Length: 514
Image 1 (tube, rainbow, N blue to C red):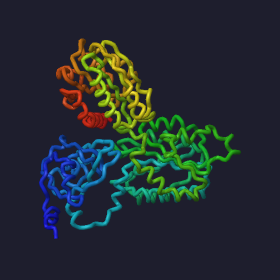
Image 2: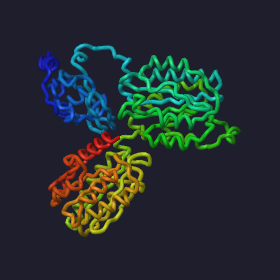
Image 3: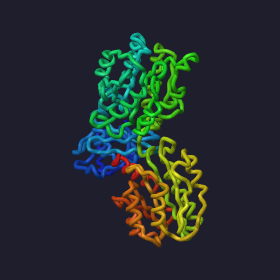
């Protein structure tokens, strides 16, 4: 019998408020360890990434408070090793705002000591904690269906809600009906029982299939704080459509995408060739969804066969990595790189700068509906290397960065900041526009005025200095708080240590503002 293991699980090991999961994972016995969080940890100092499952860079006690395993007074916590994930979702809980993060190498989850000592039956009333979406279902109640098919649709809805496992700590679901005028039946509910009752009592409305009107109605009035929407949770809209819509979907679907809503379309009994002349827009399905990539669309021949797709649809809705229209720091920001091409940098070091910028770009989901990156190089002159809309994939941006030619000249950083503000960021969205300035020396012109002007235009400024860049200049350019927006390395090789810290700071700024 291994007495070391008995001691490890029965006596908690004290840790500090700032102990990270990574500090423990290497020493875990059988993928778990019991630790003791101290009382009175400062919530402001906590660095937490994820919801339910946390990136190992997170503070263990901060994650424990966020998840509700312990309170501010501390206590025993069981830490369990989990594999790395491609995406960690942000949320606000118990006084702590966790941050989103992409692709960390390892994770951990937390339970109480009681849960470790005695197996318990999973409380399904809490909901599916791995599925944290806010879901609005647009129900087709048009005259196309008739009472019988409307009943089949309600049966499908009941099975979907049960499969999702709606609950306080899981998905929240609401219902809107389509007809001549959209009608909200249930705002975001966290009770499977209540939803099943509401579905059973749904009245059949009849009328035209004004699906676009219903999408607009849900996009504008569903996902608001007054209706109980949870901060930082993915927003999803599932649109059920029998036949084809009576109105236009493009404008309404665009509004939904701009609002960070992932629109799925389940179309039943699509128009046959002889019915196509009656369809106003032949491409309505492509225009309705978050992205026309096959993931957000599902077409079935009849309502009798919809229940076969409940599991597949549940998996899609609960796949945070694939919800491309969710507004997170990784897929909603515009980032400008302002690159010092002065003669003091040199060709070799300039390549290290481009590697540093590529590592930053690697963390973001760049696409036509996602994050966008542009780059400007400067000396005494400025040159747009590529704009925010020139390359709409991660591979294209990284490839474009690698091909930037070193200019070689003087250093006029202030004029370059003005140039970026007026040219790269033609339209600015506070909280979503970020400028990363990297320079290795002192500017020959004023930098403070142009930097303040950029910030007044809604651009958050990060300054990254190398070698002889004066710290006073870096602080004069950076947004507040200065310690989180200012970086310095004596050597160009030291830039390799900054990308993840910089990405985390961007995510924190985004969460605080949005």
